[in-house]
Length: 327
Image 1: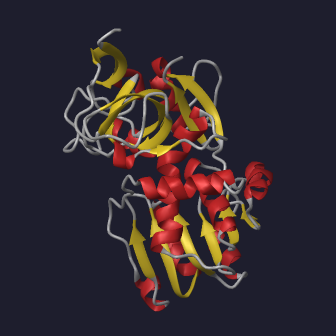
Image 2: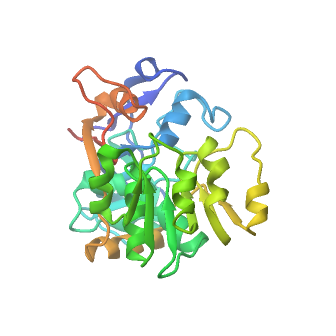
């Protein structure tokens, strides 16, 4: 058996087409309490784009293997790792900015972060749900504590995070309002959105206000969208944002409605994965995989997620872009 593995390594910060190089690195060995996983699929997230561009260069020393989502098969266990056996299908979120990432054929992780993959999901689907699913769970269940009958606004409902957030908010018994382009309205409605707003043709704020405001806002966009979100919050509303804020925000509107703000950078957790897995098994959540590319095409995947057009004529898809690592 080879002691090497294929990876796509980030060798320079900047544009996707010059940032990555195919390399062979030593296959990692699991230590105490760890498992070695053959990565069947990973996915591309906005965090990966930010890392590649150099937004987190203080946390990432080049060359580096980045990426965080994993769905795969346990091939070896370290001393004291007793929860899994070789052959088990698992999924997890790798610790962010800590050790080797997941654009690789194999990955080592502490077994307490790993869960068994839901049988009803393919590896591409599981990899596409890990980071966004745990982000949405923490945002709507742990932070804002969405209740039955509340109204939730999900910005960017056709995206990777938004498409899962609509499903989870609906499963929690909320009325779901989402922003999406007109061409995506049928799609987000099928996911569970009750009210859709075309953000590209008008200001979403007065349209949401006509509804009487919302109890919770999930911001997946940032910028002006985040700055204006408190204008649609009901009294004592809650807002959670998953987007970095490079500039100061004027929060007077939030002050006026006694709003609670949460800024979220998700942490890996087996418990969150298991909770999401139960919803998957119940048919209440299913990740939307818009495209699957091989590991060698990781630069194209980044270009697609950024909204660019790649050589095959692909455009940015709805939902997540998964990477078939073993292909």
